[in-house]
Image (cartoon, rainbow over all chains, first blue to last red; front, side):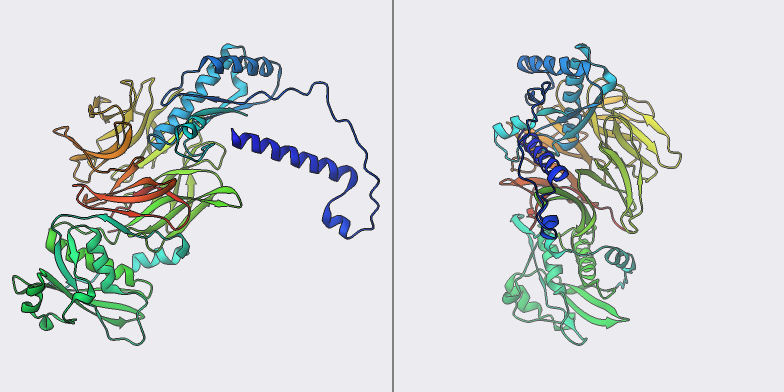
Length: 159
Length: 432
């Protein structure tokens, strides 16, 4: 979850920088070699009407379990509502905590992602638009070994 | 008075093909030894060439013997004399120290490399057991030492030594804040670690080909797990699978012609066998549960694997000719990732007891289980080709380290990495 939030922020920064470059060319190396012809800053309202409120894109599981929790189901129904109208493939990344063996956890991560996929398909999402991939315990969201770290790692990320 | 010369040309190819990274080295820490290790003195070897040798060969021999847990090498400072030949060994002096065996040796330059002549002397029997010779190239002093240790170990214990073997493991480091993964190859004592290949996505499940030339592994570099085989000597590489879903747990058959693996293209994880000559995949299990972590019995006729078909992960045996599946483990509620000893009599596995994941052995005939390790997150056991020890992965604090334990649990040592997390050790076969 930390990771995905971080990635999101990173993406936002990149987009912001790109937007800046295209209109004003404020890149350091470029301005160092040129006369300063930068126009005064202009504030633009970039709010779009359809901008969605970000849905939490991670769902969590109990140890050695792939059963969806009730709170997870509510969240997945909202995701399904959005996915039904949207085009493109959504990746469901299954993960496991560090307990147990690596290859078994790879299978467990897939089983969790499949549980999310099956639920979304039941909600009317086109199965062809859902891709399941498991990383097992190879990509933990939280590096520690406490039970709260492990709970953060037993997850499916909807991307 | 048998004389024997080993060719180490093979190992030369290995060290030439791969760059050495000193920082990546693992360092041995012995944590637990046998009750009654045999006292042995490895006297400093004589060097008849010029300059100083880049390695302390007799010290490497002593370290090998110490690491086996069966020997207590006499520290150099406790030796009353440094005999160079069996004739210089004073039986009375060594007997007073309680030393049972003395090793003497002489190294001389030979065609750009080295020749070691070494002798094993039995103090209480007052006899020379053997004199042997081993030769190697300029970069092979460590190989020469390991081969000498193998001979000494075998002469005294009757078990073939495995000090000259290697291991492959996974190392995870951080590069610019991003995780970086490498398949590493090192001597079995952790020395001379070098990178086989580096990845920006996870790599897992390295498995040696029985001839020691190739490694099969799982890489995520294509965006999903895929199985590759790679020649360790040449770097030549081939992607073997690209199925939807899991492509995992490759293990080579004892004759090297087949690869057992796990594919979930049918909807859930099933064991498959790939015939490497025909390229044909044969599905071996049909069950809605997780079937994974296959490993071959030494006769190549059956596989052991992990399945949760009984509700919890347990170990099962699959007879390839009939497809019959028999459950092997009944002790505890989590037994997984089995590996079979070279004689086919013992299983080693990851076993959970009271919430702790340990390495355990089980006698296949009697079903008797024994826990070997006492740490908390032990996994990925891999047995030496002589069946005397196994290497496994565990954690120290939050750091992944490698550790070894003898199959009788008598000796334990760890191999912490100086850099990053290490895991998934795969002990090599013999190279000849």
